[in-house]
Length: 289
Ligand SMILES: C[S@@+](CC[C@H](N)C(=O)[O-])C[C@H]1O[C@@H](n2cnc3c(N)ncnc32)[C@H](O)[C@@H]1O
Image (cartoon, rainbow, N blue to C red; front, side, top):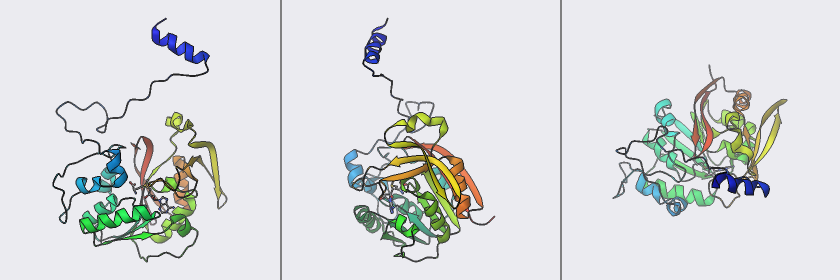
């Protein structure tokens, strides 16, 4: 018996199992990058916490850092940007962005020519960072609003006004306990929705076995039952998290059925990726055929 097997056998007797962690997926995907390829260095956790990295990684005509350089977030590359650039045309659109966090996508929507951007954020601390980004990069077309999207979906009076051409919803839906209600609200705000969200991918079932999830959850809305998992949120003090204790992650067919129930008629699945290490789906949905 090899040493490794011997150690594993001892642990098994103790009721423990040793497993090799999956290798980090390199930001350039597979196969491994050749040595000449430039890969962006990671920003530090401290920078990510303070949002200072935005000032050295984003550049536009108004502001460019002395040391402008492309750097990755601690979660790796933002795979969603390819869809934003290749599949969406925001020129002259009035956009309602949900959950901007530090305003990095707001910056991009502005750069891509949106006419007006209203970004609704639920945390005061994040809103302050967004305001700094607005000032530094001269995002005059952007307005950041403090409001809870769950409450808006429940009928709260919005602190902003439309009309909007597009709801831009990246990284928010999987932080909500009732995505059906939220999607119905999104549909009432604009005829188009650009949606990027984590979902439950059966081919990756092992990933969802941690204590962060409650298996086999279901939601019943308008006589329809939707299947998925409950995700236990990290808490209000965690900047990117949801505001409720748990959120609902649907399977892909259930997410599509939710969009249909909300009134979207053309639903294009643009692609699936591992975003920040979790299965992620990007969808462009339109109310009209
Ligand atoms: C994971 S971050 C996503 C940031 C960015 N949109 C992205 O995709 O990279 C989620 C953001 O949504 C905000 N958020 C979460 N739940 C919210 C709610 N119910 N109402 C408003 N904002 C919320 C968080 O404060 C955070 O800024």
